Structure formats: C-alpha cells, structure tokens
Image 1 (cartoon, helix red, strand yellow):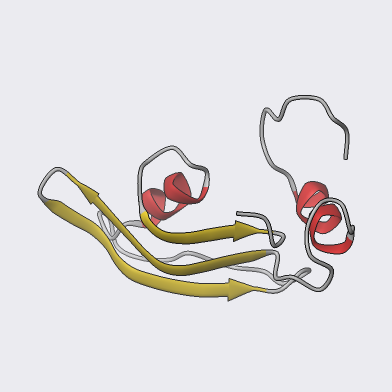
Image 2 (cartoon, helix red, strand yellow; image 1 turned 120 degrees about the vertical axis):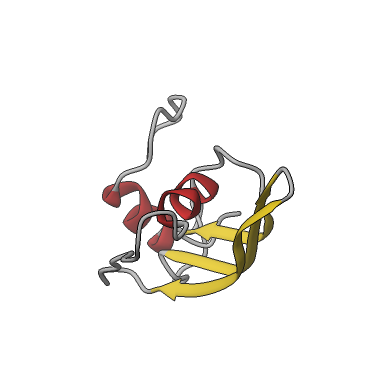
Length: 92
C-alpha cells in the first residue's frame, strides 16, 4: 500500500492489510464488527451487530427499507458515530 492519503477503501487494500505484516495482522478477517450500535438522536438504528467476513468471502446486506443497511455501511466507513468495534484487515 502506498503512503498517499486514503480517499476510499477497495478490495486490494483489504487483502493487502490482511496479509502484510505492516498493514494489519496476518490471517486477520477482512472485516470484523463487534457489538456495533448506532444511535442518531433518540433513535437506535443498529443494535448490537456482530459479524466476521474472512478474506475472499462475499457479504450481502439485505433487508427492508429503513432496516439499517446503509447505516451499517456508513458506520464501517466512519461516517456516523457508533459504539462497538470495527476492524478492516485487522486494523481498527
């Protein structure tokens, strides 16, 4: 991975972070979410979500309108505040 500022995250970054000694922990999951909760105002939008996605695996997020799919992705990207932990390639 380069030292340039990040403008986004792509699959190559996740694979490199999961396998390189300097960019993450070797053998670490590509994505790990533990006890994620998102509250905006008084509304609890995501409640205690935990999941692990191994390198090379696929993940689909499916649900009804307003179920919290986009909110989870925004929390993973760091665009909305959340409780719990999010690790990409072993890096918080």
